Image 1 (cartoon, one colour):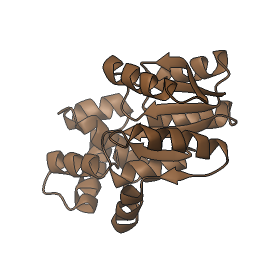
Image 2 (spheres, helix red, strand yellow):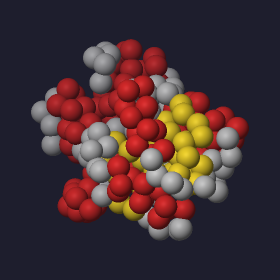
Image 3 (cartoon, helix red, strand yellow):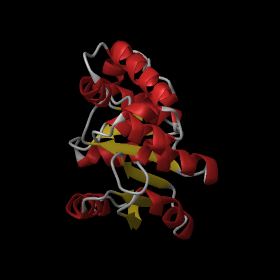
Amino acid sequence: MIRVLLAEDQSMVREALAALLSLEGDLEVVAQASRGDEVLAAARAHAVDVALLDIEMPGLSGLDAAAVLRDELPGVKVVILTTFGRPGYLRRAMEAGAHAFLVKDAPAARLADAVRRVLGGERVIDPALAAAALADGVSPLTEREREVLRTAGDGSTNAEIAAALHLSAGTVRNYLSTAIQKTGARNRAEAVRTARDKGWL
């Protein structure tokens, strides 16, 4: 029996996925989490084989939770599930140690098949996302530029971003200016939107 952890912050979606997976004779959802920062403890407590992680969760994102599992429980295979088929997410998921990347509207049979395949040592990636990721290329943003853009996303001023990230206002201005240029945007709001749409944040 394959022991599965399901992490998804929307309880209706999580319960529906758990019910669908329980119809498979060789899969058992032994743990569920609604937050990314609950994933490691749940995976440890229930000795899971595979963790299915939504990307967008409170506490820790699915990508960050995947990296924690990679470092702390390398034997656990990670399948990333997302509503948003953004190419940048795929690249970041692979960097975080994910073994599969699927969009949530894939048929349940494909998800169950992906669970079995990653346990057998394969990587499973949605083909349309793989093609889009190759076409889009690597994110041009540095980690610091991503951090500044993420913080700017809620409308924070340069001074507020500087205080939050322990930088000077001038340094923040420089990072924002570079990020705007790299994303081909006209202003910071457009840069944030472009970076989010491509999955770079």
